[in-house]
Image 1 (spheres, helix red, strand yellow):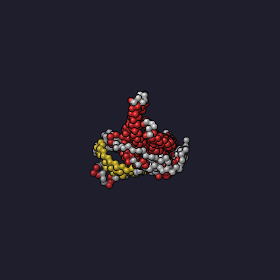
Image 2: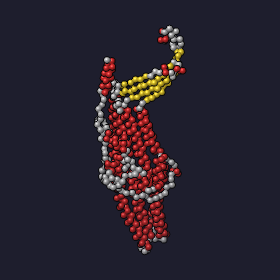
Image 3: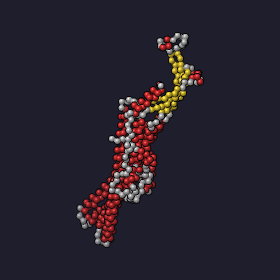
Image 4: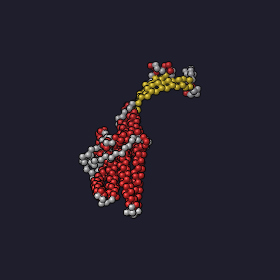
Length: 485
């Protein structure tokens, strides 16, 4: 009869504990395509490779990026975050398994003359001091019938995956920054070469003007124009040299080393880049951006935490076993008669907790809402970045086509002027002026080439830089759940 009462009591307690159990939540609805507009989804291009920077075929750039990814301080935070998340998985996993402890105890105690022992005749207890020795192994296992511990471990794993994706995103930002800075330096060097060529042209023009003034063929005021032109070109050279030096400093900071320790840099022509987007940009972008993947892992982790919080409403049942040895003397501790084993079952029922479980559950629901909102915002930002870089590249390509026509026209004018100078129709200043115009058009074209290359690097970053969604996240996406407001 007593066993029936005990069973009834446990059942009633369990029902009382589960009375406030919240219902399961509706599935999360995450966007499956990027909100891109005005872009062709089937342009015939390819997605970036993992080492996307090698498309530029520059060994120096390869070395710079490899060194930056190996030792750059900007990756330290992402690496530490991943390591911390990985350790949290181990902590959660250890908490969910069986617990085995070795226990040992030795005590020495005196019996009080005025304590409970004084009620017994002294002959029965002919001592005041005594010792006790205990040695045992305690085992404890909690049954995860409601999936609380499993959800906690899975949430920790999802957080670790998110940290790993964030580390990949940080590496991509670093690599693209190195590439952009390096080619900015290359553009400065190419523009410096043109500026020095222009300076030599203006100086020759100034020399001709000086000779004509000396011969009283032109007024002295004509020298002021050439002096102004020379000063303007020298100012441009100073600005480009300063810009190049600043880029060296920026490269050194990205690599985490002094400028003197950078690999030797050699001026080269800027590489040409194709203006073609990959196929299925709208659909595939979600699987190729590490920051989007990290956001999805955060949603997954928040959902697992919600499952764990819901399982808190159920009772916990654990089994405890103690294999113990107990003796008043150390020399008899290991004898068979000193055994004192214990075994028991513990039941934890969350009956009244002043609303703690409900508050934790609601807080976890809010975390899911925040994770979903962060995912949506990340997706919008990624789509905006891709659209901006693609549109910029297309605009620059159109401008470059027209600028190339102007460069060719300026070259033809220079050749025509040179022919007239050889025929004696015009003096050399006409040819020098046409040469200066031609150099200016080439400089404008070079700036467009530099902008196009910078936009291409930005597009490689916006497209994910070779990152792809892990298969396990793809399989788990359909299981995401979210609380409804």
